[in-house]
Length: 108
Length: 116
Image 1 (cartoon, rainbow over the protein chains, first blue to last red):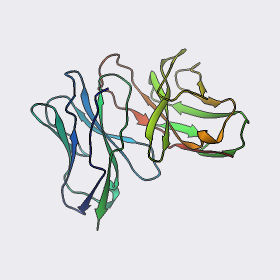
Image 2: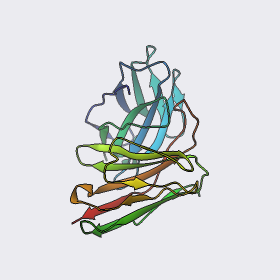
Image 3: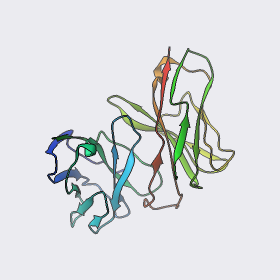
């Protein structure tokens, strides 16, 4: 499986945008880029996924570099409830391999 | 409400005493999976199932068994638990779409297991 690299931690102020980066330089043409997050004391939850084009949903936006070797998860206005560990995962089948993720702290 | 449920949520047991953690989903998903989460090691897949009567090993299957007799249920069995199986366990399910990683996985709330 292709590997992803994310910063260990990031901080944000409440109601400001947050850009969470992910590098995946060995991504293959059939790999989808998925983002999940894990709130404290909960199971992971799906955030967004994409293949080549940028994607938007009610939770976040996903910006994918033209060469697909990196992507950025964008939370447009961080809230205290967005404090979580965010995982960037490459998938081309049903299996998922979680890395260490980025721990996002949101300051009031 | 679409969900994955696990029972029990918390369990303290002793070495060698067989236990089963149940997992059930109400979304008619073909694919189900078990993970364990440990500090510093992240989430690791134990076993997965692509449909009824079809199971396969994940990355850390030693000491665990699973069964998939019905589509909605995927129990995790520890025949002889040991302290190194103390962990937080998550069950997950998704539609199975063969090749292609487009499907969303739904996770249960977790089972915290302590083996003394």
